[in-house]
Length: 135
View 1 (cartoon, rainbow, N blue to C red):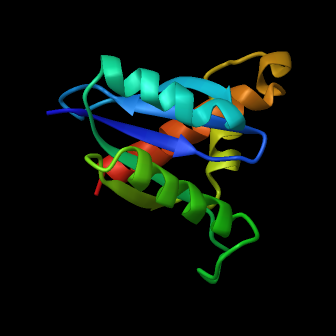
View 2 (tube, one colour; view 1 turned 180 degrees about the vertical axis):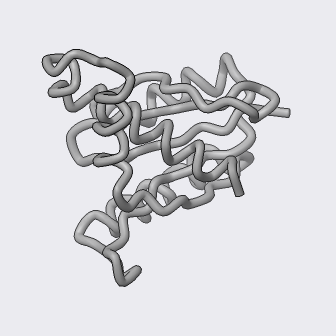
């Protein structure tokens, strides 16, 4: 069994989370500048077996697309082209940033660290992956 790799895509930076090989636990991995995402993923899949990519899908509350939806769809197409052997799935990412900040507060993370958007992106990717794995 390979890992699941979740992506919280942003135009500037992208949060990444992975599961353990048994797909039981989701863990935040890193945040990378978005322009470095594909090279990062190429390196990662060379070292680790990735069974599936899980992309956070931005939607409005009425489930209509947001301004960011086309960017995520474009990334999905690029992943399918660059990694044809790894399927791509989508997970609703509505409210994950707020959930991430709330989780960081509950865990006792200092305010200064919570303000670092990279931290929020990694926790958001972890929440996306947890939601996907619970299905």
